[in-house]
Length: 332
Ligand code: RIB
Image (cartoon, rainbow, N blue to C red):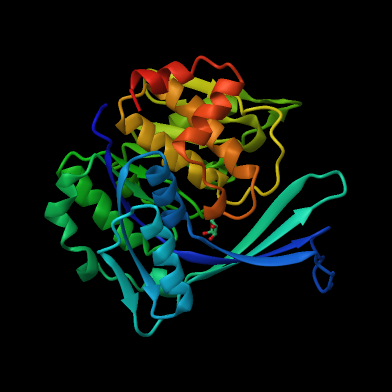
């Protein structure tokens, strides 16, 4: 069996407060919802947990408040075997919370809207992460998102770049990113809306298909700005991957019951990074990550729905898809 990759996530913890409703309220309107629950989330912690559930050795660096939510979120990561020894507790800022509204329509279609109040995530200081300047060299891949201060992402990306450690930036939630940061990235992964904000290029859909020309234009634009590889998540259309030489458009997994899309992008990114770090080629990594995302949408809540390697293998096996060979070749 191969050595599993060592992955560092510098990112957010968010406690998700989830209400489900038959329809989103309009401005100024009140609607009666169906249910309420809480779940641990946050793009950083979700991606860390997904990587760990696929077998990676994961270290999480981030900040929570010194409160019940903070302790619960650290516990969720510890339960998955994640090294949280570098997770900090802020004595002033509270833990971040996410207001997650989940619309479950009469047709069974689900959609979410999320407002994150960043709390302690935005209290990470440069001094808090200086130790990474040398320690970053111990990792096979670094994962970043945009729920912590931009200057922290810039510093971590710089450290990784100096030590030749591949860096993935999941550019969510949407924000403008400097060319300097983009040029330090091995991988950048926006969804189609974040991609439009970053590049000004909208990805159009022709019925059931995405417009490939638009997708290639987004990839080209980000490569021009210095990114090495671009991975675009396209929801029910799957995902696209491109660099200067390769281009793959991998369809989403069909016939999966969509219960809650929260965390699907995170599971996809966490899985892609783990699989690529295991030596799986890009096209297979995207296809397998699509299965991981599909399993995530089929359960409620972000972290509770992130699948294990065994669950992923079982679904691929059930669909008789030869991407399974990719996982078997990596002997996991
Ligand atoms: O990507 C989903 C996550 O975004 C949720 O868990 C929520 O906490 C927000 O950070």
